[in-house]
Image (cartoon, rainbow over all chains, first blue to last red):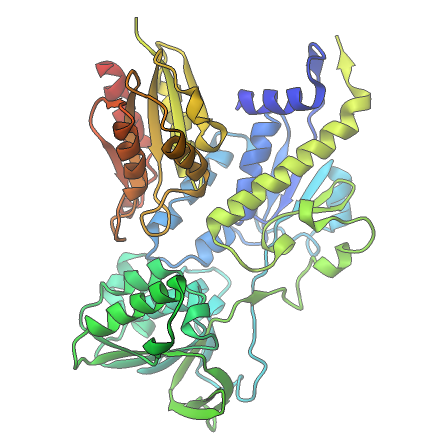
Length: 387
Length: 147
């Protein structure tokens, strides 16, 4: 740790002799992976700074706690790194405090030398098509919050049937597929409440259609996520991939991962998973509750009967977000460095949009931490006291 | 005289770095340095040091991105490491294929360049829901006692 600081100092001053520095006070808004990784880097750079993390939820870790699937316990364990920030490294956690609502950003900026927005993007992107508000259609964010026992999420009105469509083929969609194949007891073993595990864990007979707009070569899932699904031996998998059209190496690997599931599954099973690639969702239909989904691929149309839909097509800024990006991206901002204004920065999904896994957030936090340190030291350069 | 220790970590999510810091903290009887593999060059190996590598596994049994440049440069420059001793600890998740494979790439390369491994091959399985720290610290103490 001391080494990291010394490196930064020598980079900026060379051999100026012994110097003393004031340590900037730092507030981070949001305690998800980006906010916590940033706190780790800034703590190493400024061992004596007051660093506080503000969080609107009562508990820390954001999407690591409420977005990561409960059965991905290896990923969940990263929270144990962050615990040390609060337990040993003197970073302060202030929960139940929404900046922009409970306390203004202006006030926070007056209190702290440096403020960093790490609030992410936490509203499910909507499809914007007809029938979207029928009963039985649920967003991935809501479902993963329920699976992870979010204190402000409730299961009111949720009824999971046996004929499910998952719209989207990113990693969140594949999470929902995998979690939909776990029985209630397995879900409970990963900490899911009895109520939610009973809702999602019925496994007597089930058909799940996983529908993506992209063709297989552009499907968003990571191949490891598909390989993980192969642990379910009593599920019949099908896909509509046209193998004659697969040419390049990456799409070959993607289609082979799906094909492995298909060829290694039994011909008959009570549970069936159908992968549909290259189909745009046109509309949902039904009188009160969703009864089906209309799809289109090039000139072809297809109708699938379903009683439950999960939408997992990504995240966006909530209309009700208390800190909006557009309010901070005028003037001298430089998003490449996470710079919004003097003493105001941003990191993570707020900075670069809703893409990238947890390791990407770590690299992002490093990048923004370097920018913060470099700005701080150039600002302090005129004020350094040399003994 | 016992060798100084250089701990090299290769990480994606920070777990290997986090464990490396705890490993360094329990080595009290000799000089110890910790480097991110991305800040370490293949010409830096010195026979007066014992190298302890801790490396995670990324994607399909691949190296974490921070470890790739060092691996690639060792592979192409082929430094003679016949007087180098190392110990290695791998991170992985047994629910995936290619469990703990990331570190094995380094082990194979170091061996092929003549370096000799000491002690048990350390492993931590993320499927336990724990971080590697505790297990890596115990393992480090055993390695240090043997070296």
